[in-house]
Amino acid sequence: METKITFNLLECIENIHKFSKDSHLRKPFFQSIKQDLALLCPYLQLSELEAVLFANAFVAWFEESSFTKIFEYFGMTSFQVLKYREAIEVLYSRNLLMNKESRKRQISTYELSQSVINTISKNEALKIFQNKKIATEKNFVDLLEEFNEMSDQVDANTIHQCDFVDYINTLCEENLHMPIFREIKNYKLDLFETYFFLDAIWDAISCGDNDFNTNVQSTINDYFKQKSQALYNIKKLVNKETKLHKLGLIELSNQNFANKPHAKLTKKVTDFLRDNQDLLIDEVSGENSKLILAKNIKSKKLYFNTDENSQLEQISSILNEDKFLEMQKRLAEKAMPIGITAIFHGVPGTGKTESVYQLAKNSGRNILK
Image (cartoon, rainbow, N blue to C red; front, top):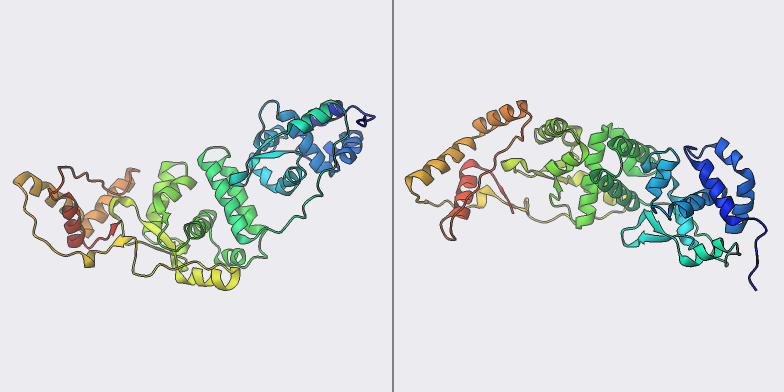
């Protein structure tokens, strides 16, 4: 025979949900639902915060099961989900919620099990769930994975850029017990430089090596939503005007053609991560292994008709260092991408690839594979 509960579970959950709106989870809110929490917390074997999160997750599941929406209902920004991650993970560990995105370790979207719905709707006692997991302190890689998730959400417009900036600031300030975050503070990097630096570290870790894995243009475009700001900071980075270069934290591939340079960590950084964060990041042997170096390209004499020669000479002229820099300056002043794109077309064997090699050889530019 199932045990009946002496209070109405659904009314209790609904009341907590009703008072949660725009509460910001502040102390007066918890005072206003004190009686409901006194009933629900022992029933669920949860803390007051965990019970509030569950009550709102239970109600919200019938409309849209997302903690992002729940925190908006609280009157809070969606990135603050991460501040309450441990409490949310308790709900998963107790099997009160099921994770929709377990493969991605994403906590925002969830499911309710039918057994939990049935038990609560029938006002019956819950079965004994497993004990709460002891929260383990996140290591640096965990934090970087979380950072990458947040970056993806900004890119998908799930959270606002301002929230992401606040998150980066909080991430650095709350983890000063880790050597790398103390170093970032000592470097006095601005928030964008901090973002780029952390992204470059994550790229090296996720790719398994330190080999120019960070695309400068796309990384900066992900951070700056205004095109003019993005172009300005691309130019600063390419011209080595940031602290990232001045402090010897990153280096760029010798590749400015089409404005698509790539970045990697310097040996100074990989050594620091190895010695202080127990992170061993492989250095790829060979100079710029993802590049075909201009000095290694064999010179060849190519023969084309008059029109083709004229077009190739025009490109060659533009790639002259002084002219190229002047062109970049003019494009930047007009808030345009500071590079050029040339399309080579023709049937196989007509010299498209070799033309690129010879242009690179003659202008001293490397080719990104």
